[in-house]
Picture (tube, rainbow, N blue to C red):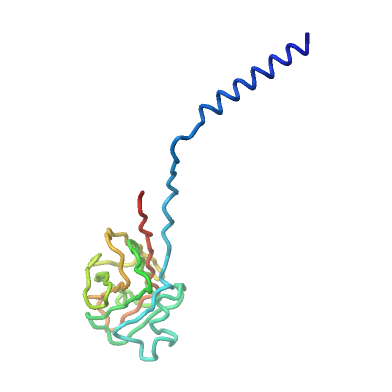
Length: 187
């Protein structure tokens, strides 16, 4: 009697399993989109250039390479600030930048950037203004301010045009970082 009862239970379980498996038949392939890639700081991937350099050159203690070295304790300093001054990054592959940050350096706030625009280009000659800021200040020394903006395109060049500082004949900045938001394609 126990064997018969046990056989019925096994047969019942097999029938349920067969019905379950029959209901799982896949007539079409299912596709699940993964989360989009995370934003990434790509500053170090760009080749830095500027139109006004520190008198000691780009690799000097306060030369231009310090503005993208990832160290907020260093700075880029120029002694002849001019409103046409810019800092530029050139990438081997177009980047979709929609966030950047600037960090104030250790000395006088009058040397800090105050007005600027960020522009993008794919040929280094024709520029599209992506973000404009005026009257910006830093609450403290070594203060990082982050700026988000809408950007519909990817560019190989990004240029930060510093159109005004805090009023000094000198300019300084500790750090400029740019963040790439990978463009995803949908199926």
